[in-house]
Image (cartoon, rainbow, N blue to C red):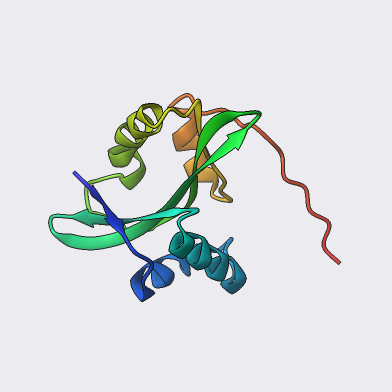
Length: 132
């Protein structure tokens, strides 16, 4: 089982988050600043005593209803274990215990979308972009 341990911002967290294709260096600076000032929280992911990744999460209020957001999650694979499946139930329970009405994340990874939809997640929004 993967352990989720509270953490302070570190170069290890930054290195993990740099592996997420959708996040830029300016995103990392924003995550760092928000973790340092307490607007977001960081977790270190560990398996069998070894550090395997990091997660940044926060709680936002939408129409006065708290929603937990997984802002970023990066983890190295663990042979024989699906990171998403392993931590999913515990993080859902953590969100509920924190008084949240929903758990949210963003991703460009189609495989993650499929995994979460199998766990009753629903697509809540569309992101459109015009590049020039």
